Image (cartoon, rainbow, N blue to C red):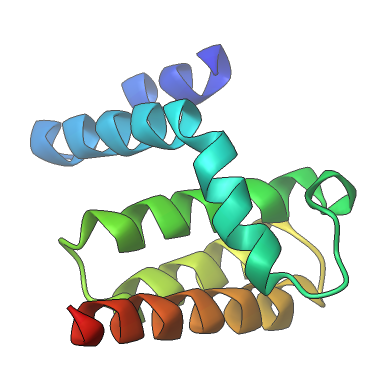
Length: 114
């Protein structure tokens, strides 16, 4: 967690962007058990502990952001795919896309059902 905060602190982004990043990371870390439960429902045939650490954390961040409801689903998924392409394996973007698409559809159904 320290390395993530150092990375953010070294960034030259707008302070509002940095504060949003810190908040998202803190919320994701605090909610990781709940986020993993959501992901486990959609990562068919995968145990959370067997997922690559990078993929698991990209998925956690994306689901936390989806649940926050402040950013369009397509934007969140697109950013998650970009992270997977840059920091994970060649197969990761397809996997991340499939899981997040399923999570987003579930969330949309839940929202419509209310």
